[in-house]
Image (cartoon, rainbow, N blue to C red; front, side, top):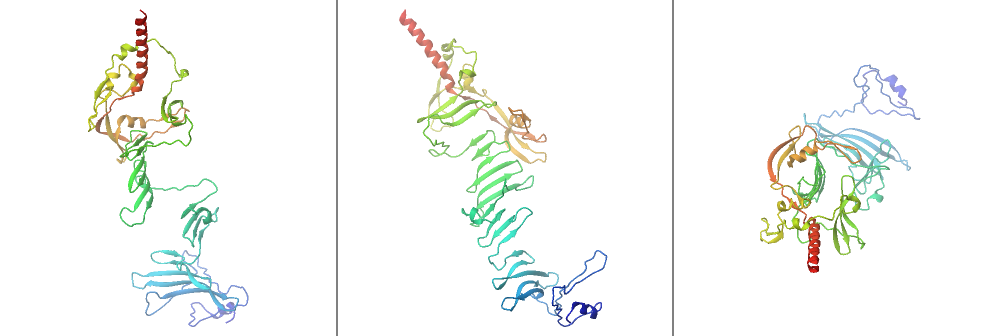
Amino acid sequence: MTRASDTAKLLGAGATILDGTTISTADNTVQLTLTSTDADANVGPQLILDRNSSSPADNDRVGEITFSGRNDADETTEFAVIQSRIIDASNGTEDGRLILQNMIAGSVLGVMENNSTETVFNQDSVDIDFRVESDANANAFFLEASTGRIGMGTNAMGDYHANNDDLVISTSGSTGITIVSGTSDQGRIAFADGTGSDDEVRGLIMYNHNGNAMTFNTNAGTAMYILSTGNVGIGTDQNAHGLTIYRHLHQYGGIMIQNGTNNTGNVFQAFHNYNGDRIGSISQNNNAVVYNTSSDYRLKENVSYTFDATSRLKQLKPARFNWISDDTNTTIDGFLAHEVSDIVPEAITGKKDGTQDLGTVKDADGNVIETNLSETFFTERKKETVDKDGNTEAVIYPSDYTWTKTGTENVYQGIDQSKIVPLLTKTILELEARITALESA
């Protein structure tokens, strides 16, 4: 047969051709069309390649479509092949395999394979990049075959991979990564050393949705916590302060702040009140550290220089003592806070014999959000607040969160002994005046 139309005339419905048949044309007309005029929802038309073997076996080829043509030496060349094979011919556990091959540099090599356990691209490990194009980006996903590196939004591996980056995400605008986890689960970025042991994950950044806290792990241990309140703990998950640092200190192992210039007056730390006014700072003065508190006359009123400092000073009771927690029983000089509170109240924080109740915070489902939190902190965090610009700040704890008391802790008084200096200075001036008066009598 030389024409497809002749074939159609000669073959009737249900005809079977037992030997190889070639449909050949001298032009680009369609050689074979399968048409189904059935109006139902079933499949049609259908093309079935049936390997009806009396002794089927694993790895049998059950069908192949070959795309061949001529090279410039007028040789028949298979440029692409779609092939199917049996993986498992056992009744009830049959598995199949679909292979897409392509002519690459004179050899037919596997481009894609789909089997019972995986889909593999570039099975024969040749230098073929893998690229996924989106509506707006030609390199939405790009795998560079020669290096195994991945680009998202870029295929310019040389520009971004100088620092051994195996994944680069590039856009012309803002760029980010979103990790979505369950409401009671964690989202993680882990860093492993590949040892294969149970603790091969050496570093970790994790957000825990159960409690809304973020942790940073180093050397397989938690180094820093950022709690749901915004408080930060370094070496501890203690949550009562804005920043808590806990570690075993060795010599200068605490906090070091080094000035990059030799300018006097550079501020290392500034403190501001609710209105944004600076109320104090820690700064450098040549080779000394200066601790400053606001003292500008423009911030003060009702200034008086006439008060009896000597009588108040005489009420103070300096003492010698040692700390209970100090195993060396080193004796030092100082004050008992409650004995100073009525004389120089601005020098003292806290109340005598103060305590506070601690408890556990749970969400509406009973999940533990925080532990060892005071009821005062819990109550404040359920309130909506307004900042100095009048912007409403959302509550930290929803209304259905609960607090249950679990214990009590002491809240110890503190003293800022520098607040006694003005009283000492005024007393010296009063005594100097009395001495001068006696000497003049």
